[in-house]
Image 1 (tube, rainbow, N blue to C red):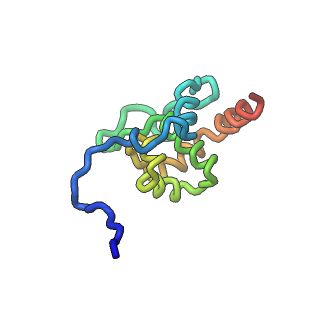
Image 2 (image 1 turned 180 degrees about the vertical axis):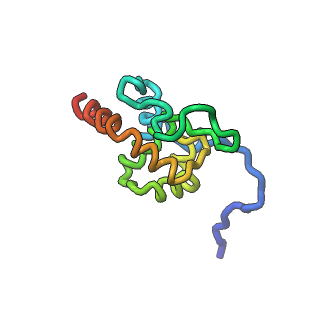
Image 3 (image 1 turned 90 degrees about the horizontal axis):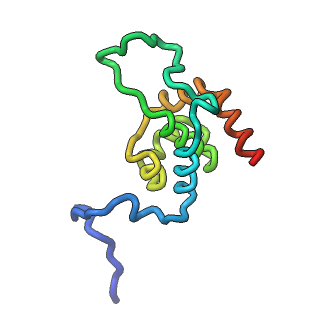
Length: 132
């Protein structure tokens, strides 16, 4: 009797994430929506963290783009993933999120800070989406 075998995990395979995401996948719509948004128009401003806004700390890590974190937040909202820690975990293992986040995995604290610092803007965005 024949047995179905999987691929060799140690075999190098060249592919891109675009090949794994269908063009009609909802993450493509989410990507297009966020790219068209006027971020300052809905109230998402850079450096709203309340931390020192003077000279950047030489030892500090660069920040994630607000558009990227907004995509992650909206993906989590649409897929009922509310926890920042769960979103962080999904960024590393979910193919759709890996594509959407461009293989970046922000830590849970960055995700939570984005949500906290832009809570008014996120409410405004949801109101706009419901009205349309």
